[in-house]
Image (cartoon, rainbow, N blue to C red; front, side):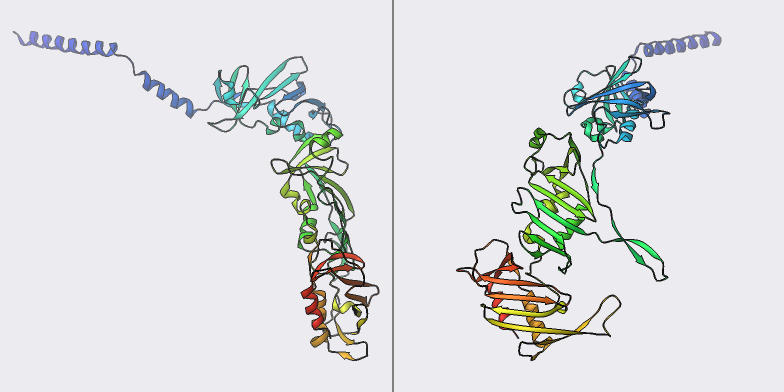
Amino acid sequence: MKRTGRNILIMLLVLAVLGGAAFLLLQMPADVSGQEESSAVDSSSAPESAAITEIEADSVESVKVNNAKDTYTILAIPSSDGTSTDFTIEGLGGYDLNNTLVTTNVRTILALSASKDLGSQEDLEAFGLKGDAAVTVTILQKDGTSQELIFGSAAAESVGKYVLKDDKVYIVSGVPDNFYENQYAFLNKEIYTVPDRTEEVENEDGTTSVNTATDIMYSLTLGGTRYPEAIQIDYSSKASSGYLITSPIMAESGNTPFGEMVTALKSLTADKIVQAGVTDEVLEKYGLNEPEVELSFNMNDSDHQLSLSAKNEEGNRYLLADSNDMVYQVSNEAVKTWAEADLLNLRMSYIWIPNIKNVQKLTITKDGDEVWEFTISRTKNEEKSTEKNTEYDLSITDVQGQEVDYSEAYQPFYQKLIALAVFSQEKAEYSGTPMLRVEYEYFDGGGDVVELYPIQGENRYAATLDGVYNGQVRGTEVSAMLEIMP
């Protein structure tokens, strides 16, 4: 065979082989799974973003909200300057409604955008779009048309909440949480704030300035079922701390628990508002027809009255405040300094603690006829005194006119005397002549009387201050004090 003919034959054989291979490749099925996986990756790397609602605020007539907790209507109103549209809640115009919050929340749902379109879904309950978890919002426009949105639970796979519109489920971020609550979520939750007390002070250069001063609780009364005997505490110059319990006992207050109470009462904010419009039925529903605690106080010349329920199942309490026509919910932690106050903790443990340098005369009578009398004179100590504080040196004489050593005899005894501590507030039966009567007379006038009456069959005494019951004192402490009488 000639060389040319042989080459042509070889070329024909190669073409036949290549043609057969091409035919086989064309007959093989495509790798569908690989193409779908690639497509899924591309889709997730490019998240969808589409407008769900595009509604002008000026075109809205009202918005109706229906959830498991409440049903209410939001109305469109002209803005204060008349140039735009604001929103308010029907029926809450007479309350402290945060119209700015209402307007902001409505404007948010008028321009919602989805981060993902999940399409039609059969099991809407799985997305919180059906049942008690769902929130139905109907936007009625002035032209008579309406749009319905259903807000569901938080999305599991990304940030946002599930939203149903026109039978399609979307994931949308920024859905306002307030629409999941009752209408009172738009009311301001600050109950009150007591203004600071101020005082004018003179500066070194002769000018004056106004400074913030220490808060003063001028009066406080605790009552209610927890306090069958109301506790009354008043601001008093005769108490070293500035505060005196005047009922149901007479004792000095102003200690740490009392200070914590004053701090807690400076301002109060609710966790939520559960009811606007207080009726007898509402009071009974929230346990406020017979409050566990009733508190009235005057701080910095600002008066407030609070009524508090017992704790509910979650440990929270319901509260009425001043003339506010609504029921608040507060945490027990926010009110426990006064809601769980104890008389023994609100008082100083001592019967009475007048400053030793304020007492001009001290008279002690034992069993009605045994008398000790100490007369005190004082002179200013020029070296220790300052412009703001005067220090005195004391001289003491007894009833016979004999001098009593201050540091060796009088001061140790006086410290034992005022250190007599009350260990119980429980009322005790006592009568007759006191075992011990202590009379204080002061340099600036006035005086106080402490009396100790024996309690029958007990080594303890019932103490009174200015004739008012103070508490029980252990007999061992009284004996120890009498042993060092000068």
